[in-house]
Length: 191
Image (cartoon, rainbow, N blue to C red; front, side):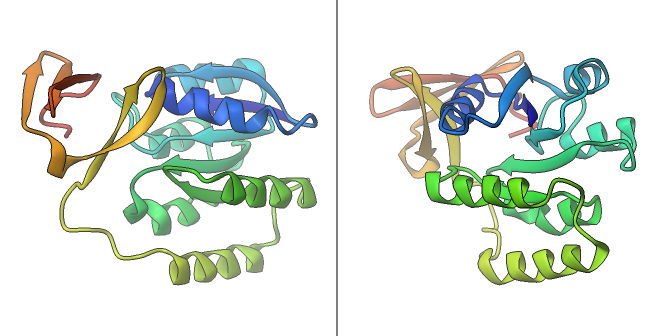
């Protein structure tokens, strides 16, 4: 299967790519760092599966689906740190929904489902998947608790309890935590 990775955080794309390395029947045909680039890549590369982040600058994951059109959209596996989008993801017929940090076992389960369902699942299966997901997903916290940051070349979740200071620098944020500074491509308003 031809796969496109879409996430505005490079560490998250690298982690997905590493997880996909164990799947020789899936080939990554491209990556996109934002929604606008994702739309262009989907139209140009014609992937069969898109691993799609929900929150991205300019055009979010749902905007990508709206731009392409749900009926022409390849199978979508949402990959996001925000579980509050689960219901909306299934409303737009997402194939699966992975919460960050993605565990290898949960990722393998999503791949097994992709392999066993070469076409879109029948409409009743969507309701079954939504019901099962809602049983598994805990209610969203009332505020943001952690952020994905890059540390030593890999993505880690930084608990906001450990953050001493957040500075805005145009489209970037500098997070200071226990003597270390992390830089994120987000605005303070988006955070």
